[in-house]
Length: 450
Image (tube, rainbow, N blue to C red; front, top):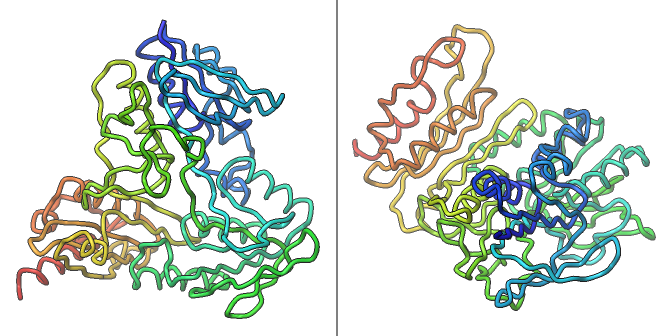
């Protein structure tokens, strides 16, 4: 009876394990998870901190008991420290006992995810210093807030997690300062849309300091008292670094599993590493960008679940492929929704396209229908009119609009056809000319009516 060994028990790992067990019920499937938590929605952690999700157990998709009942053996606190691919064995550290042992496999799925990046400056540690990516890290943060009664926070990093934590800290009545060393918000958000987000943050009492460099961590024993920056000292009760994540692949050092420069695992469309019997999926992997054709590292839960399913299908003998991504993502920032897909003009130019970009703003509903607000749209195409990407910021309807754009970008649609797309209309949902179609028309004229 073949044995599948899965390293990692969250999104990609559990998707892969479940798929194999459904297709091949007689297989032995063992999942090794380094922590105490498995199969949980990590994207919901900020909202658990903010109290939007009331109970911790609401974030779990499956329990260990349910998985065992399905014939999937789950072992918690089992950390894989190395792989001997020639012998088809891994070395495992049992965190509870401190004992190491060898575990055999016929097929191996690596789904170890990512780890939060720690600032590369001495002293960012202590009882009020936090990173935020896993459930244990979220628990530590929540316990500190409850124990200390923290009323103020500095968030270092203005990506998705940083922005979500701004809102959820504010939800708990905390005053919040958001800093970033660059001028970027959400990394790729173009300037007009970035400014809309900045206005929203400041209208909610958030102090935002972009182009701010941290020079020194000021401490009192095991407590950080302030960050000394080139914009002055920033004091707070707690400090959260949300500066990104890195692939959790340190244990692969010395193995033949191919790694990109940043440590992400390189796989093909089948999620195979090219090493016999070894597969990989999720946030530990790089993927192909369907517009640029280049490898990228964009760790997202949607991608992890899809890759896990594809890997599981192929492990079990089916034919499945994961072609890549267009980088679609969305985040809520107080009363606004911000979303991106594909490439910006600068990214497109860097990828070798001769690209054009437009920015427009329009109403989210018919002008005579109450409610709604301004929708801000940026669209990018090549000089022939092929859609390369887009961004949307608005008070409502953003997910539908960005998903429409994602489909069009994935399909390689041109702006002439996109301008005539038969999108839905009713005064309570959109104007007769949807903001996407308005933007597409403006871009079409810019390119072809010169």
